[in-house]
Image 1: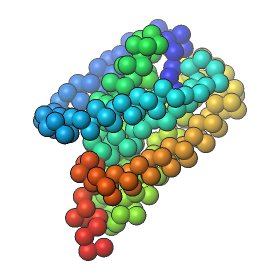
Image 2: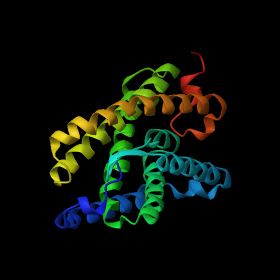
Image 3: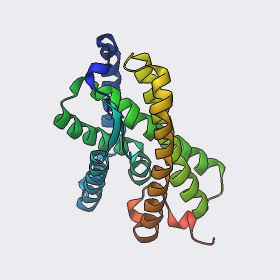
Length: 220
């Protein structure tokens, strides 16, 4: 999405910045920082953030503030849990913001492009984990494929609504020229996320915090 500062009414910042502050407070309080004390875990986390940064750098757009790129939020959530996924996406967005200079847009982009897809991906994982059998296909398809597609679709809907309410672009224009492309991109995100998660749980299951081969593979 990558909203630009000019699209955000000044009054909205009084709400968005405190919300972003609350989010980072939650990350600080809830994330298990000891995990990064292990050099191997730190290397995997740093590498994952670099890959996501590369994905965010490859983007296309129709107008200023209406950009498209893969998110990687679902994969980060499944690999590290919600709080480290939020932390990683926050770092990636901070780097992107330093380069584009859209500092006032940081909290809106953080909430829509990080908090929303991570929260939705984690909710789907918890529902699947609690309500369905522990099966490899269920884990990959519902969490990797379906979860990522739904997360990106939600980001597209939220960004469309935000841009329309902020008066950045008319709703009719967004519905015709922006939202359809975002919904189509959800399939690309689903395919990429599902394939990556499949590869990780086959070759490096220890890198995926939400996957336990004793539950999903043994005896199946």
